[in-house]
Length: 446
Ligand SMILES: Cc1ncc(COP(=O)(O)O)c(C=O)c1O
Image (cartoon, rainbow, N blue to C red; front, side):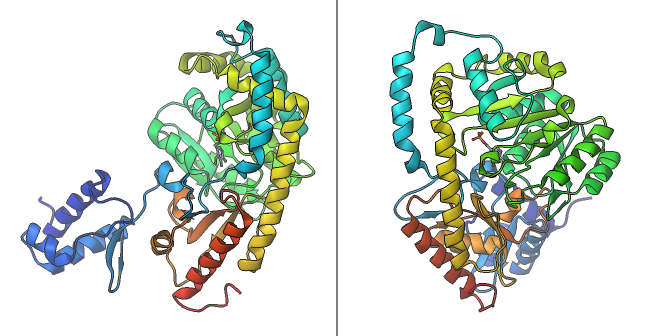
């Protein structure tokens, strides 16, 4: 049977959205125009828009028209733009200008040390001295048991995540993730044809009971957890919760991928879950968040029985990460400067969280985290807020990008670290506060 007219129109518009003919946040043609094109009535077009709206593809605003919702593509979720005209609250990166001088110095030193031995191919994902630096980096923040044999080098944490999803699961397999999680994980799973199931979170992170149930019901091969300064909720799991999660994982035939790239923001450090189940867990740390995303240095500790397999995947994919970058990273770690840089970023995060709390009162956040998970006042939907914020040059990340189910996320994520100066951060926060209050006055913000 043929679809009714309005379903056909909705399908055509959906295809145009997919083809980027109607891009995210753009306004769709008025009903009358589409009615002419499809030789129908504006009422039928309105029904098509309603159907698209129920699929969260578009959103209509009285008096302003219908707009395409943003999709969860990674490049939409996280936007690296920064210029004088915008306020970028979207990207989670260190306050970069603070790291330029130490990086320049380390580059100079590394260039003096550069010899033929560092510019050839190597085995086992990279040089021993570079892997040893990775062992020491992760150890400093609480990981035990790292060695030059079980610690491999990747091109950042994203590469480690992609590597593990591809090496440890097959197309069609299920991966368990936090119900709100880093969109980079969702993007890999979607491209690789893996199903994703969300595990409910409570105020301490992944709930052990919920994880147990999700594993029993969905039989995932892998569970990915961000234990510290969780992206996007900002939750840091206390040690007791980490132990409880380790116990659940230990009971089942499942691997843990512990994405611990924000571990340097915990002071004192908290033992990673991997410490309790070293033979069932992959631990990821790296330098993107503490030093610079441009370094692309990820350190991956793998269970002894998986070293050969993961090394084979690295070699097949990239052979090895750039030793030149790793020379730089190793020099910074060996001299202790990497730890000083991480400390400085942590202190900056603390200062910026304090600044933000003056503008966004009553919002609970991690006091040393890079970001805020901000509930929107009830008169705002996240799509509408994003469109309005964008018009004012404020770039934020919609809660929808992080949600496995698309539900329960009338939130936005605000990074406090990408805007270079504190003065500009304050201006941006003031504009955000005004925008949130502008639609209807609530007592949500001061
Ligand atoms: C939880 C999480 N994992 C991984 C990454 C990517 O890290 P990298 O730049 O080292 O690939 C991010 C970046 O935002 C992240 O938030």
